[in-house]
Image (cartoon, rainbow, N blue to C red):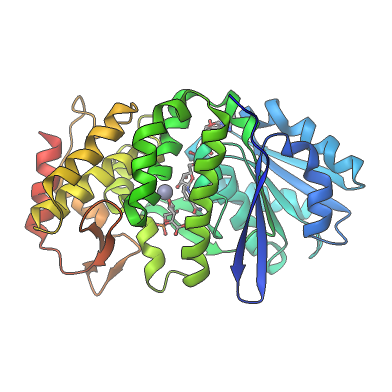
Length: 371
Ligand SMILES: NC(=O)c1ccc[n+]([C@@H]2O[C@H](COP(=O)([O-])OP(=O)(O)OC[C@H]3O[C@@H](n4cnc5c(N)ncnc54)[C@H](O)[C@@H]3O)[C@@H](O)[C@H]2O)c1
Ligand SMILES: O=C(O)C(=O)C[C@@H](O)[C@H](O)[C@H](O)COP(=O)(O)O
Ligand SMILES: [Zn+2]
């Protein structure tokens, strides 16, 4: 296994832009890269979770201090439950207690949970302060740290309270993936595979060939997959920053997946990436039922995700209710005039949006997956 060089992927948003740095050893460069991205920053507050803080907080603080940046830190419990209004309130009070000024960056060090929570706090504290992402999960490095969606969950559903707030810098140190549990790595793989399914059949072929080695820790393959994913996401976000249209393609598998997450209570039973894997299999099944997608493509999706160890159907040991799942789906952010816009596909790499999907076809997909 060779050590890959760092890669930089730019995100261009009209007059604004930021860089995603991807590669090994980047945590130690956090200070210099922060000073370059947020000129004049002399203080910063790092938000992390208990697991990640124990592993990496001191290293990041040392790097920042060496660059002349004074740091504070706020730590939340690990896990999806921290994406809550009460954790947001605690965080906002901590930021204000730190003496946050309009130029003080908030730095998210961790996975998508910390990124979404800290990003939303950065969006609303003092009506917006600079935000920096240091993603430490595969999911966060390929997806959540890029594009500026931030949110907490509501009792009405997933990510229903949030804001768009772009980071000034994304620093994805691929070495941090060495400590990530295999289950979390696989969950991130689902969001990686999503880019192949949406619009890049060649990337999907590449993942079928290299997915297992990537998950086994091949550093060069990992860096290549993260860079390809970030380029794909950067292009979509540059074209449609606030999801007026085509950005919704990044929601492939999420209408089903978010409903499954809501039903399992946002706990450890089903991780976001696992729910997305099941949801993508359902989206391809639905596309096939509607006569849009060849059955062999839907089967390829199911087979590969299962082969890398991802769940491809809801846990049969639990009781599921189709109507309850449909109820969650009806609160999806892509609902307009009571109609859900689904992300469907005409084949691998050929996703599109469709808002005239018959409810019975959706019921059939859910029922087939639950039996
Ligand atoms: N904003 C977006 O665009 C976007 C995109 C995709 C997902 N999301 C959100 O991201 C969240 C999921 O993110 P996630 O999968 O990163 O979960 P997470 O943040 O909960 O992290 C997963 C687990 O891994 C641990 N961990 C993190 N980095 C580690 C490391 N390097 N070594 C060891 N342990 C580590 C964490 O403590 C946690 O227990 C969901 O809430 C989802 O809705 C947001
Ligand atoms: O960045 C996007 O746009 C995405 O849809 C990425 C998704 O992976 C992510 O889970 C996002 O939070 C889901 O979007 P939401 O608007 O339904 O919260
Ligand atoms: Zn997602």
